Length: 60
Image 1 (cartoon, rainbow, N blue to C red):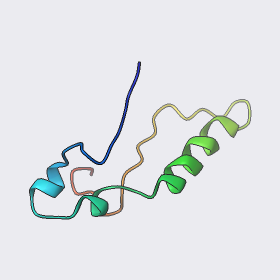
Image 2: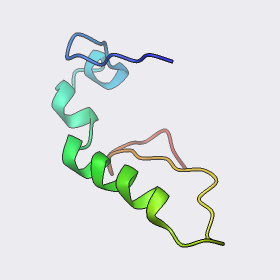
Image 3: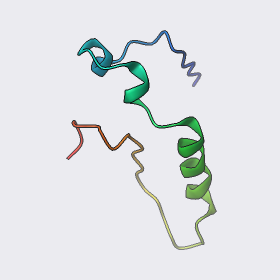
Image 4: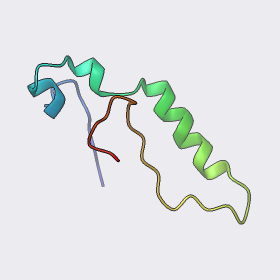
């Protein structure tokens, strides 16, 4: 699977009048989360992981 993200991708929140930068977490924060997950000890499973900004309203 290949995924390319650029600033040209439309954002539903940006379409609602919010600036695109308000829609995403800083890349270094997402990277820290991604590095954290596989570093868990044997027997500790992360079966699902959702990374979203604190302002995300579509998540319960």
